[in-house]
Amino acid sequence: MIPEEMHPALMGVVPATIITSNKDGVPNITNIARVWFVDSHHVAIANHMLNKSIQNLRENPFAFIRTMDTNSFTTWEIEVEYEGSNSDGEIFTEMKKQYEVLSMMLESGNPITVKRAEVFQVLSVRSCDEENSHLISNTDLYIPLLEQLEKKLGWDSSAVWIGDEASDELHLVTMRGLDEELAAKVLKRVAQLSFQQKKPLRILNIRSQFQYAVTTYLRLQDVQNNFTGQDYRKIHQHFVAIPHIGEDGEVIAVIVSQSNDSDKFRMFEEEVLESFSRGLAKLIEKSSGINDENERLKIMEQELEHVLLKVLKQTTKVKIPLSPREIQVAIQVAKGLSNDQIAQTLFISKRTVTTHLERIYQKLEISSRAALTKYVHENSLTDSSA
Image 1 (cartoon, helix red, strand yellow):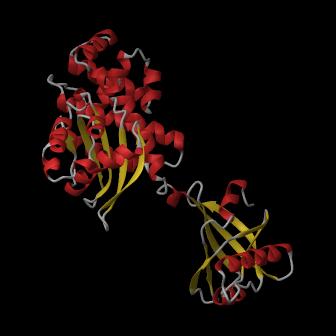
Image 2 (cartoon, rainbow, N blue to C red):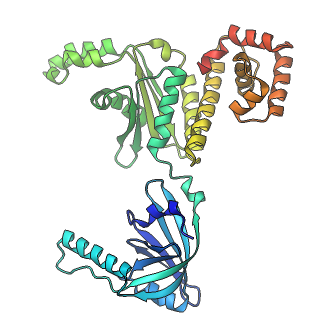
């Protein structure tokens, strides 16, 4: 009855809750320190300040227990039937030892006591997937996103900060291609500016200006010792900051990337950068609702390619008459993929691929895959998925 994958949720890493009701159906919710595994069909809880819950269980033995596996952020709901108390069995002895250790560590003058072990038969167990989908950790979201930004755009030196509106502070989530000292010293300042202004930023050719400030303005203030000659040589020339702005208009996170190659950021002018920021926000929101890691990575890669195609369409000098999805299909054709392979790559049906190709041929006034491949290369559409 109790699946093996649920066992980590019964280790007491975080508190659980028990929901009971009296004979009239009036509910009561109580926090409990831990749910104890008895056997595959039974669990137990320690009777410590549970008077109201026990009174309800004697009137109505059916209850729900909710607990969480902190490794996977999975919430479990257990439907149980109360069987009674135990004050001398193996489970009670284990509970008593744990509370004795806890009392000793707290150096409490009043020891924490356990009256009894309350034992329940497990009637059903379920994983609360409707809640679990919203509990993807920030690192699980942003680490693969930075990997994709490096793969697609060559942004190989980046970091992500989560914002705290209450304190106006930023907390580092993850970084890629840089050391923590540099991230805290330079990139965090760029992130802070984007966070405060609630908009994306592109900063070009900043190093020479920084060097000037070190050797003039800061010297006059006699604080140049805080910025050595090595500091400005570590600073890259160009930066972009991409805020993840939620539906309420508040900044959730900021992605900052740096480079000495201006070509990596050249196409991201203000309007394009704002569009890119909105696209990444939607990508993150969509990805955060997918619990399966492999599926989440596939969707993230697909959505990022879709966002980049929109950026390409905004920046290209040649008017591209194709929709972002049609451009995706055209690029796959130029790679030599069959309709079946394109369908698998883009997570669409083969029939949809055929429909897109028919529309592409009509819009471009061409009639073959070879002609479409030539069009893709001539208009540099493959750059978006390099």
